[in-house]
Length: 280
Ligand code: SAM
Image (cartoon, rainbow, N blue to C red):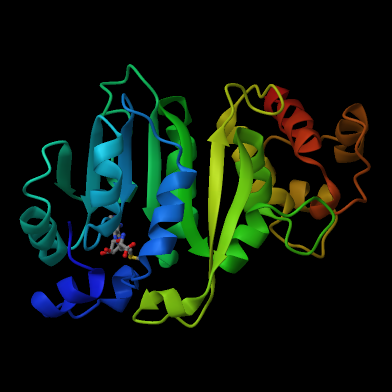
């Protein structure tokens, strides 16, 4: 049995580093529910983002073939190495998740699962990285600041609906697993948290011609929230839209250019980005 996170913190006199989002989950019941939400099987390869003290890592290991514990802080890598030394199927990697190759653990053959109580300061970058590796990932269960989960799961037309909601929904089905109060962490963060499960779709929600154009279209549509869609597009795609009637282009997709980005559904964003992609 592994020691509790608080005991490990004391034993190694760990001083949590705020800059690295080090707020450790100290409630084992919550850790266990997060691990259950992954629904992992023998045969799975799992990557844990920000393994920290290894509590979650140790809980997952007996259920899967392989678990990669990714951690950026060398001091915690040393702790993980000592605390997890008797678990044979754990691979500890000292590295940055934003540079990690998620196709590596299964040698590019099978799709892996991802789990993590992630550093909140890089939540969006982590999401974008996972989406880049969507062909190699089947699902992810991640802890975010609660408001980020509200944004990811927001329906169109609401205040929270934005870049994250559209991009994540295009590629994944999402489900909020639970809300986690700040008191479950040490040190106690200022915000509450929530756990989100993402099942990566076999195909995007709308058949996209080009991923990069889709991402740029979505970012553009939300770049100035108070501007209309047509005006935001004109400002950003200046070269592509030169001499073009933006309203005509939008008409072609059945979207009124006077609408604002937040009113478009995910499918409409797909249609619009394909139309923009066809322009030279
Ligand atoms: N998994 C532990 C837990 O649940 O208590 C730690 C969670 S803590 C919120 C986030 C962890 O991610 C920290 O251990 C931190 O050092 C690590 N981390 C921060 N930035 C990282 C990065 N770019 N790549 C990998 N790990 C990172």
